[in-house]
Amino acid sequence: MDWLGSLLPWLSAAMQIWILAVMWRRSLFARFPLFAAYIAFVTLRAIVGSLILSHQELYFFFYWITAPLEVVLTLLAAHESFMKVFGNFYLLWWFRFLFPSAIISALAYSGCTAYMHPPVNTSPAGVAIISAQIASQYIILGISVLFFSLVKFLNIRWRVHEYRFVLGFGISALGMAFAGALRSEFGTRFTFLNEMLPPVAYVIALLVWLSAVRETEVQAEPAADERPLPRELMQELRYHLRIVRTFLKKG
Image (cartoon, rainbow, N blue to C red; front, side):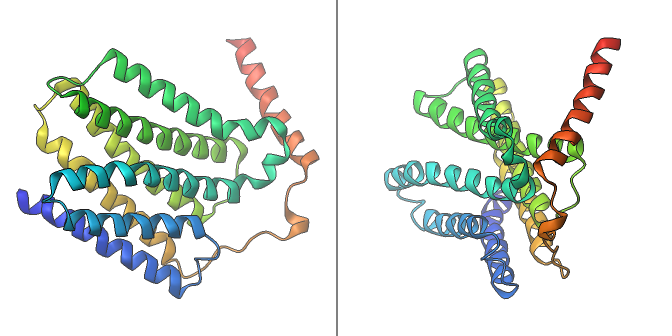
């Protein structure tokens, strides 16, 4: 199955270029500049990485220089969609803490997981790489869970681009996190699964993103007078909080 491992990176690069081309043709760069920057960066990173893969020391430094940038761009791209959907809710002071709280919670969870279940049969450098990858993917997972939980809880209308962008990030992160957890728990017993899960999950994420940018009917932004006012937001949130409190009292 070595051919599959060689094919998936090039397939991903081709799909990323396709996504950028569609976004350019449909003038989506202006609406989602951070998502476009993320796709362009990971495409360039994958191509350059494949060209220097045979030079192990050079590839190692290249990986560690660019990996943090990819994580930052991923978070910014996810936050871009988050803000487009929940921008009005940032008028509430406590809502501004939800996004960083998801990041902190994900970091804490990944740190506890790495401490309680350290990777077996792995060098210190390998432990550092695996732990960093798991931490970054848990952050993205936490953001995705927060996003769709709020959408469901607050009954937000469907936004095809934003929802599918965040969904794609969540699928990719889930594949990486699950592969990292397998590696931490079982070492090299499931090498094929560890190696194949992340790229396969990423290809699925690319398909989700491609389906989003190829949508023929662009979702229009609500008119200014249709957007919920802070008072309406507070009324909606208080209604849901009363339901939660009533449920807790009954329990």
